[in-house]
Image (cartoon, rainbow, N blue to C red; front, side, top):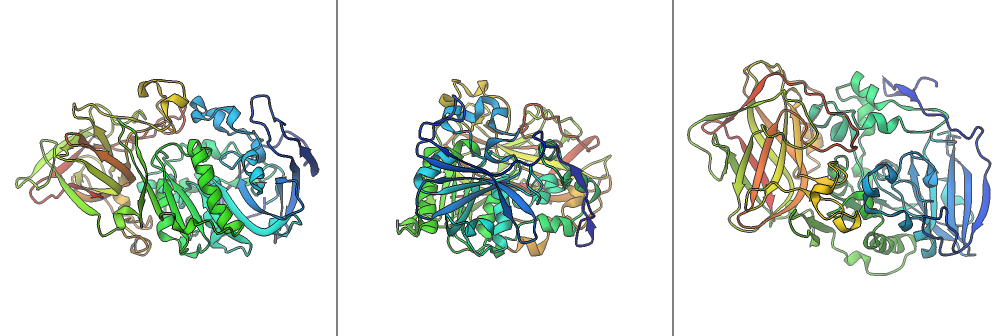
Length: 570
């Protein structure tokens, strides 16, 4: 591949897996009859459907993409919803929900098998008089690199939809203001892979990105983002290009968010808060992203949005609350679809609470007058099973029912007697009135055929422990420019190293991703502090993360040290 630069940065590339079908397939057209099933396990096609496979779409720069088009048999022009992704169009790729335990509660009989991984199902949307256009992204399968709106069957109204990668690409596309893009539906998508994942908190992590990108199939090459991360730990033009410019997005937007993902939570909330569009809504659910994507409730709600902005139907969509929030109880059913006029922690009615860490490992409303210390073994290996038994925690018992919403901040004064840097991880957990640590199943147990949470595999996809935050002390510098775009979130600059010497007491502000939690009177909030990741793995086979700490860390509390936890009550 010829040299490719973003600004002055040479982009490293890696070969994709070569397709196994030889030469690129020729475009074809067939009619799927009612009752047709892709396999005997899949749901049937309900209405006569035109399937135009491997259609060639020519981009403005001459690059051709390949797409499968599913559309109703009609003389009327219909709007199109594009699923643009890297996993192989129409379910043809290796990566799919079969790779996850219990298929995350989605039986094969619920889907047609023609859907893109993380995309809408044609069998669901063609009967609603929409065309589903599954596009292989540039470099994927037979794609080399505005055509859909010009196709004779299209009404000229185009949307994009999908989850994860298929959501993230919508941020970037909408910011370019394509003329026929009427609306978008990013249903949980990362918005800045550098800050939100690969270098979250300034700590390198390519354990997920490496195997994911290595699964892409195509005739060309792809950005080798893990290699770029190893070579360029500081922010530069390459990483700036990967950060979605939300302020340029002006089309109506249907955004979905949850707490159960280790990738997309903050990006989804950032998209809602920072985008310029005045017609934007966010729905926060209490399950797992794929389970939610194919639920009847999500489909019906999304259809109402699409009907309004792709078909112009006056259906009262604008009366939908701008924010619909979810609060997780862990030991009871979650509260969902709680309406707010804005992100609840940004409302004037929200109350910020501050609890101070004490030497006896409590969270107190007032700071102890005398200084104290709590130490922990910072170089203990990560087992990807949540906090270790030896990780210190600080507890608070709620005197009355309390709802927490949004991001939290752990302000910690920390030192390392023997290390010249520190990676500090924090996590909020909930314990019941008896002190039992609680875990939340992201999928209703009845839908995966088990009766207790303990039977659910220990992966981030299947279980939620609580919100996390992390920070490398030398990377604590905040970008004032990027942070000014949010009312409550401070964004790291990743452009300035602040040295740490052994014994230095460093003030760290560690931000935890947004959440929604309910505590009843007598239930406990626990703040865990550790030197390693306390999340569960995305895959059961994922290797543990490296721990770069040395020896033990000391948390300084009380007196002149206002080590504390700050969060929002609504």
